[in-house]
Length: 471
Image (cartoon, rainbow, N blue to C red; front, side, top):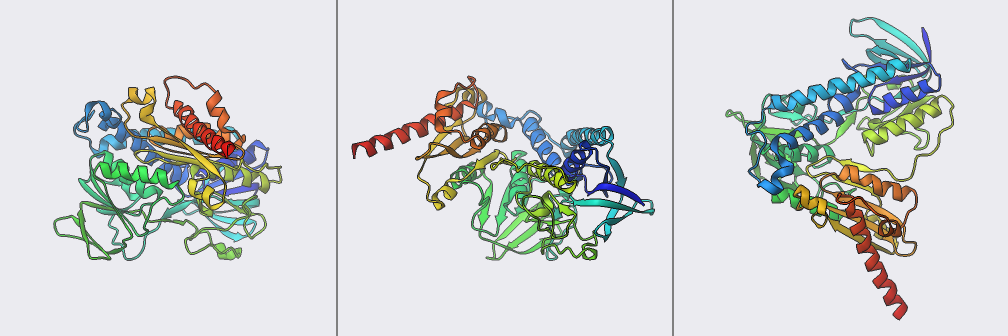
């Protein structure tokens, strides 16, 4: 039986970062991956495929140029699913190659197979050829990720009624689509297919969507979606889904409304991929969605020596945060010092348009009773925005009236997930509105929006101070 300092089950963002971190500390590391190739959900069905699909759709449709040439402008008139898949396969091959090389040069051992617990120090691995192996670990990290939630009342068929994993295997682009679920995954795919000129209807059981995002940003985002004829139906659940003889899908809502579409994408949540791990052997009990509770500082579970990181531990379930969780967990698992990560991390939603946020929303600031002021810049106010043909997009910053410190930055529009990092740095360095007012930004750039929003807030704050002095 082989002995390792750390066994990592799963090779997604959390697993890969944990394995490499432990290997950098000269530890013996084993990664067990049951998929055909390393990379996990992030590389094969989640983060990388969806973002590649988005970029390909925007390029082939000429979406970014329509501000100049009109909504009817297209780079390629007839876009097929093969056009989208070609770029996807190239990207995935590259990602797998990079990861394989990282494991190889860091001397990380790999086994393809399905792992399950024998006890808290031992796992059994069944390889694809039926061979069974056993391995012991000083610590074990669960980074198995999640899979789409598939309720029994949804008649999935893999062709017309699908989940988000199956979306990448469709045979043709649908002319119409109903997306059930207005979470991050549902909204990303809904807006991508809308950009491909598919008629899209989104159905969400809650009265709102993306509740963790600043409401003003969500309102602007919703307006843009409706402006391009996407239908957003909130506060309604699904009564039934049927596939008709014609091949179309009939979706009946709880209020009796009927929606017809060529395809239905069910994207209402995900579940932890824990059912094959034999967690009962070590007394570890996941919640009803298969997620595992961990200590938020060390990522150790209730069982000593057993750690978990990534989507399996729940919110925020981002590839970026999963990587950092894996790194921190690995350091604790091998008894290496680990610093607490910075307070603020960015949240990116790769919809069309992008949304990215870091820090507190206006609603959170209000709930905490912090006196504040906001500064807003519209991308159309920047010269770069004019050059790019942007007539939408905005950047919002929130500042403390007392300390002038930046409390939150929220962006919707082109390049939001790149732009947010300027605000993230200022947040974590406890910067103030003066930073944006006094610093020079390259011209013309979209980053100039920070200057405009900073000046907007500065002027409002100055007026309030003048009023206070006059009193």
